[in-house]
Image (spheres, rainbow, N blue to C red):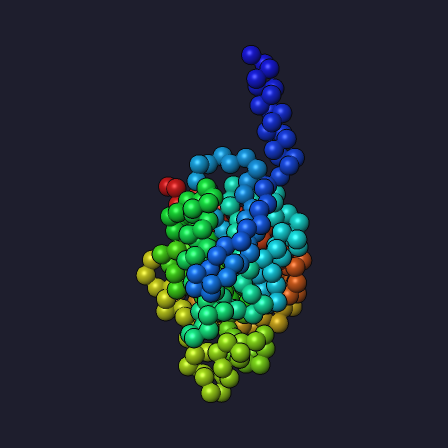
Length: 271
């Protein structure tokens, strides 16, 4: 009777040594009529038939493989918390918006509809929104909050790492003028596309929110103002700020906390 037990222990040890499985997939976007790459990371040993899912959005000029290349502990976090992670390509400077009249920039539809449907069809992902979360870095931090606030039927929780949570102080940066037009002539569009002016959508059923930004980050002030405004409006959220700059060292540190936050949210969802 000892042999099967020893064999099982050996197989489990091998899975732990191999680590989480990393796939690179191409997902067809009907809205943009092109294939878009994504990295999917799933636990080496799936202890649940259906896994909770965390979408990780990259920043300006980034790519779909940024997290797997730059966050050394990502696979270990996936294995530890039994979370399926999806890292889509958001283009060089999409800000994860749908831009009217521009078929090349329909990234809100892609991430929150087309990609979610692909993952549900091809991976052991739990399809209930309470088992799906989204976060991101920089442009991706703003994108995560923007998408989660607008699609609370899709995402049950949201985070942001050094997110550009108010785009208006930066009218000439990061190609936003190319997407929305000049701020001087299109201020209404800028207002409707910035997280800072979307907090009315956080009312109703609570949306667990985690906001994090380093104190030496150029987005620190807008994140602090978002935290203060959410506090004034009595919007429940977790706010954290640690020493650090706008870099991948800070992202890696923040993700340790955010994975724990989302794991607790998924655990609470089962009760």
